[in-house]
Each structure stands twice: as structure tokens, then as C-alpha cells.
Length: 281
Image 1: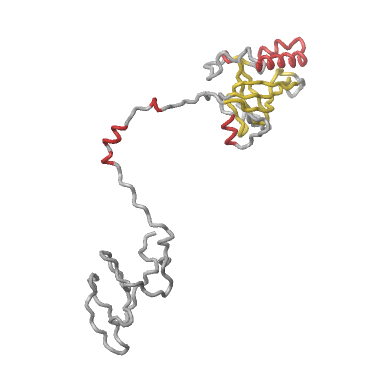
Image 2 (image 1 turned 90 degrees about the vertical axis):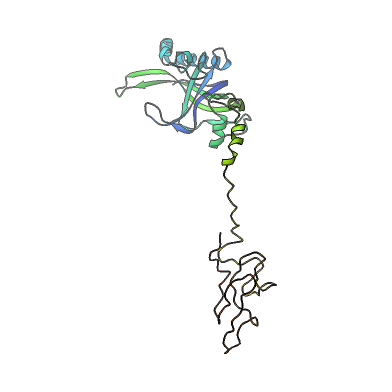
């Protein structure tokens, strides 16, 4: 087998599969691959066609030209039925490898390995530099008879060079959309009200006490009376404030201003305001 390394400067990449290897249409091992487009008069096309012809002559001698008519890796985009974007008027080469190729950023000291950056730098339509290995091959039957000979290319490495309009990409701008400002303003009466903000979990966590309270602490000034206009909270009787002496009958009390509730009887325990029940969180 004859082979040679070839440098392809400033080509456009197409249909890259560089994050994960891609299975071939005819089976075989999955491979990383990419297609490179180049103008027929470009430096990349000159390097590639010269290498292919040299390897073919070294491997196949006088049969080289005949073999290259059908089994050359360099193809014309115009020969494809319904050529994809970027193929018309250009030559193209598809190179493959079982191993992930060496991937470099525009700064060649930076290797690219993470999938997100690979997809960002090597999108179809972008400009790259590429290294491929052009080699000859012979496919033989089980009996050893040669059934196919040709030239192929192995993918060695790719360097990001420059961004360009992606192949098949559709770009939109503000001018593509109609101005619907008046329609939006006219329909503002149907705009839903913003949802109320939920209390913070730290302030209303189940079982949590108020920040200025501790277990067994005394009521604040005003002895637990609600603020003006707020709903009252049930509380235990305070010692000395209408609580009957030990052994005496309980005395009826008038409801406190704003409470509108019956006076507590006997030693009925007060609700626990810190137990977290019916507290939103």
C-alpha cells in the first residue's frame, strides 16, 4: 500500500461527524468523517490531485488512470444529483478514520476535545485547514482475487480557520417580522395579573419560630394583642389578667376590644402558634 500525508489549506467543511463516529451506509465499523470542499484552482485542490495521481501511479502503474476514473476520492460537486449547498462548481473529498482526528483551534496550540466546542468550530460551511492521508487499497475475495482497487483518504486532523454562513442554515433578523406593537397594546386588558410572590421558606418553614422569639419567651409589649385592623390570635390567659385563683370558680370576662370572642374558661390550653399548622410555605 502506498500512502502520503496531504495538507488542505482553507477548505470548507461539510457533513462533519467529529463528536461521535458515524456508521457507514454499507455497514462496517463506525468512523469519524468529514467532507472538504475546494475550488478547482485552489491550493488545496492542487495538493490533493497531485498526491492522488502520484499514489495511483506508484501503486497501480499503467492502470492508474483507468482506476481513478471510478475509484478516486476526489469528486466533482456538479456530478451529484441535486448538489447540496456549496458543492456546485467545487471539488470535494470525504475522509474517514476509526480514531477521532486531531482537532485544533485557530491557535494551533489549543486542542479541541469537548463536544460543545467541536460543534461550534466545525459546523458545515465553516473554513478549516485539514490533514489527510491519501492511500491506495485493494479489496480481495475469499479466494484472493482482486475485486476492487482504488485510492481513499484517511482523516488525520482539522484546524478551525474562520466562520462563514453555515450550509443549510436559515438566519432571521428583525426586518423579517411584522411590527405587532399596536396589537399587543390593544390586547393588554387580557394580560393576566402577575402571580403573588410566595413567602420565603426561611420565614415560614414548618415548625420555625419567629426571628425575635424563642421557645418559652414572654409575649411582646401589648401582651399579644393584634395590630390595629388585624385578626386576633387565640392566646392563653395571662397570670393576673382574669385567670381565677386556684380553687376558685372561674369568673366570666367581657371580650377584649376588637376580639369579639368568648372569654377562655378554666385552664383550657392556648393553641401553639409555633407548631407550623396552617402556615403557608
